[in-house]
Image (cartoon, rainbow, N blue to C red; front, top):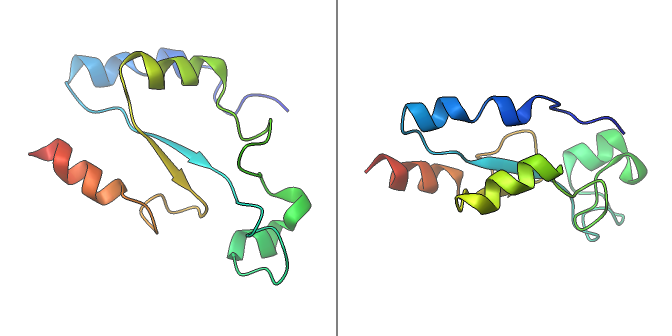
Length: 99
């Protein structure tokens, strides 16, 4: 599988320059979500075999992204839908960053 963002290490300086928080998202599904009956809309669309399983090799962050998350304690929002706000604490995290 090719990297989704081959130039990912080139973009973070913008957030540093403007003192913006860097928040990363990581998409994946639990084994329960991949087991019938399929309740998750994306798993139904892509099927369990076409979905990313949490903890799998495909779920791991690319090394340059992983380094960015740990180097400066940048948070990772774990999500299981396209919308990173749905069923996550992203909105609360942004509110805390704003204050």
